[in-house]
Length: 279
Image (cartoon, rainbow, N blue to C red):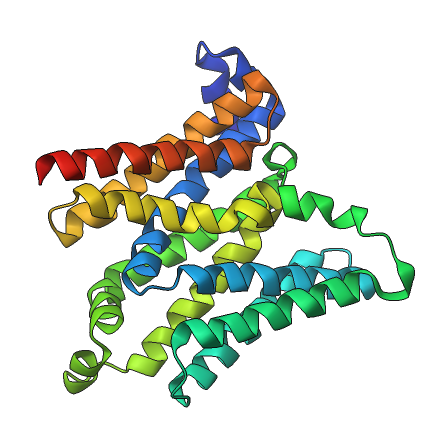
């Protein structure tokens, strides 16, 4: 971290001379590739509502952790979200219901349970506002280190199983016929989404987190010509939006998560226009 702080001090940007902005920028540079990579598979596998449902389950885990007096409720949220994701994968593999129906069932149940626990005994809901809106300016060195570990793990997983995951998302039957363990692949991927969603909620906020997991891939899909471009462009879009959003939030005093989401929406609009023009 000291090397990063030294590097930021050399840059001619006033915002990066503050320690909290140095931490926030480093966290952004770690989160953006996570959003970009995850987004491509979420969009390809038509799982955008599922990532939103995982956010709701993470909030329920946070509420449980707070009620139990856990010092770091985020870890409870991680465990609860992983269990939620695996349970969803199990029910999905054994049900003839449409995926969006099952997602609606799980999402609504998670929201109801989270609000019920958070307001149990007439407790105030205001202490959970930081998880709804997020505050990347308060990210700690420990949280940054954890994001780095998750990013490295996701990249390794992507290199080893990216193609199989893509085939599983596009055509599960074909993937199964080629010996790919479809259920295991889906379970691992949903677990990865659960971990990423939960760990980034305190930074960007639950209310707009899903947009960060959908918009990079959706925008990249408008202009990418092949699978490799799809992944690379999604990560680039996420990096551009995250850095721009952090700068906007610093100079205008707005929420960083909301600013990032708006920049991503603008990128999607521009990429959509380019797609139409190219067609």
